[in-house]
Length: 351
Image (cartoon, helix red, strand yellow):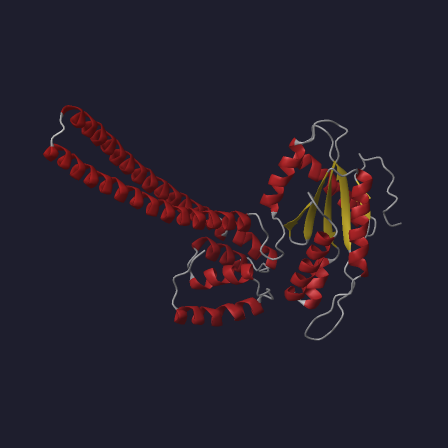
């Protein structure tokens, strides 16, 4: 996303954004700042209307609400950027095609000249005729050589442009599939990974599992320590999850304080083992506030585990893991539970 505001305007908006974030106890992360900026700058009517409606209704402006506005009204601009890059690629291709066609025409003309010179040589052997042929051949060769040099320069220029555009496309794709707070795969990226993984499930013997991880009592953490600390906890859990998986596994932030881990080629017992390692690692870690050194109350997670059943949809697969997660919550939290359709005993789950 790009902004054309002047340095002075940016400074004025900054003085408005910071108090707005503080008033609503919002973290100064890129998402909350961007949404607040667009609201206060009145540059995004949809964002302004959504925030004003929420304020009029007396509802709290939460971090999750700001994230929802970002994903709905700001993030889609990446699609416009993508179209712009696509148009630029088309321009480069058209330019290259025109350059190639021009060179082909020059090469055709040059070939025709050579053929004519050959015919002339077959009919005459006078000194003046030979001198004229050599003169014209030299001229046409120089013209063809210049055309080839021009095309080579154009090819080099277009190659550099294509490399720049390719890098832009890769960046757009990465940003569109990543969560801005944690750097994890987002819901859109997870949907792609999940679809690809399930397409590979050919028989009931194939193994694919999913974990849904939820931070226990996260609202209490936000209320007690503020959203900045809440964001720190979200990032800490994300890093812990990444450390416990490998290879083809995918860790995604599903929304708020909830994560999904996709484990292709993993048995249910293996998935339960991974889940328990995650639960234990988070439980054992003490998180402190950098500015005060104050320890935050113990952070724990509840986890639901499900094994893919041949023929079910991705939505049904996630629903079963979610049902297992709620059983973990209802049983007291800080535990691992497998879906009831999965009959392997939960030896790794806490009592």
